[in-house]
Amino acid sequence: MMDQKKVFKQMIDFQKTTFDNSFSAMTTLQEQGEKMMTAFLDQAAFLPDEGKAAVKKWIDAYKDGRTKFKEAVDENFKKVEAYFSDTE
Image (cartoon, rainbow, N blue to C red):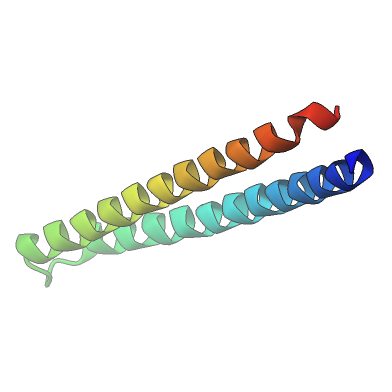
């Protein structure tokens, strides 16, 4: 049983590392997209201020959702890691 737990813990560690790396790459891409959109909005004289504000709110909501998602995933990884922690 202990060997099985150790194997599962290694699998969870690998999955967490993979998730963290993928999430970091996704965040970088999204931040670059945000910078491009912000630069576009700053130069878009044809777009009314209400439209610019709506897009900025959308960006903020997206960032907030991304943060909450990461926190939820991290919390659940902690729970799983706690279960397997007695194998070390």
